[in-house]
Length: 95
Image (cartoon, rainbow, N blue to C red; front, top):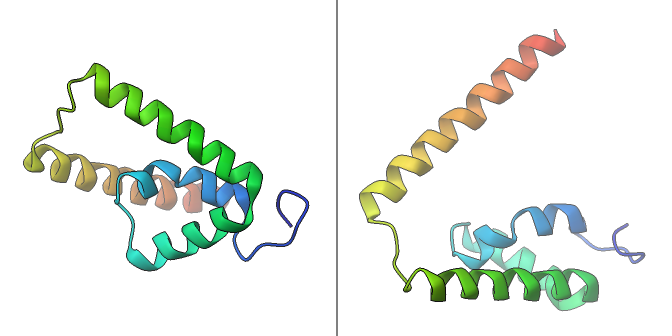
């Protein structure tokens, strides 16, 4: 259940990935799933709209500058390492 109605994807899961969706940084299959959810879920669609406006405001204030591809890739790799490390660490703590 999410937003009071059954959905294939939980609202929390969709909203956690809104920026990835906006930045086209998730797989096409995931984008399709999120888009389908947004089409059906008014509260999530409103939240998506707010996030979209915030992103547009930041872009206007930053002159629509984007990070160099090298930097984006280094950050993506580093974040992946942190997530993997955190997951491995969490498993050790659980044992």
